[in-house]
Image 1 (cartoon, rainbow, N blue to C red):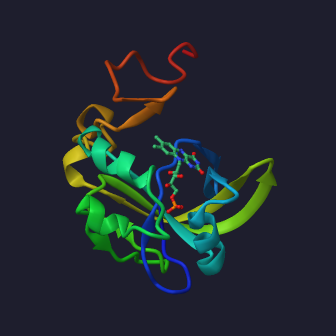
Image 2 (cartoon, rainbow, N blue to C red):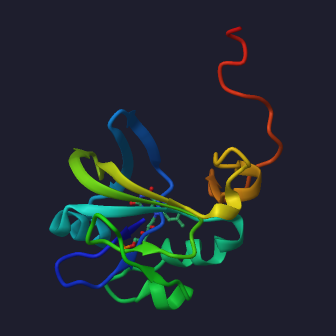
Length: 166
Ligand SMILES: Cc1cc2nc3c(=O)[nH]c(=O)nc-3n(C[C@H](O)[C@H](O)[C@H](O)COP(=O)(O)O)c2cc1C
C-alpha cells in the first residue's frame, strides 16, 4: 500500500494482512504494526492507496516489505512510477494492475498492530486484466499472494461462489 504523510514524500509498505470489511460502502481493512512508519504517515494525511502487485512484481514487493521509508525511497528502489490519486493526496503505483484510493475511516489498536480501515473512493484497473464483460479476470491478473512466509500466485479456477445454491 502507498502513503505520503505531511512532508509529501511518497512511501510504500508491503501488507499481507488485509480484507474487504464492507461492500456498501466499500471498506478495506489492513493490519499495520504500531511501530511502522507508514502508520504514522496515514494518520497525518487521513488517506492511503491499496495497490495489488502481480506475480512478476515479487522482487519489488519484497523490497517494500524489508526496508523502511524512513531511510529508503522505495519508489526509486523499485523503479516504480508515482501515479497521482484522483480523490486523495496519497499517490498510487502506476505499474500495479489494480489500485484503490482510500479515505481513512477508523483505526483500531489491537495488540502490536492497528486494524486500519479505509473507504474506497476510486478504483483503477489495467484494461489488459479485464474479461470481455469488463470484469476482473484473475487468470490474466496473476496476483502475487503471500502464504505462510512464501510468495505464490493463483493456480486453476475451481468454481464460482454460491454455485451450490441453485
Ligand atoms: C510479504 C510481506 C508481508 C508483510 N505484511 C505486513 C503486514 O500485514 N503488516 C505490517 O505492518 N507489516 C507487514 N510487513 C512488513 C512491512 O512491510 C515492513 O516492516 C516495511 O519495511 C515497513 O515499511 P515502512 O517502515 O516504510 O512503513 C510485511 C512484509 C512482507 C515482506
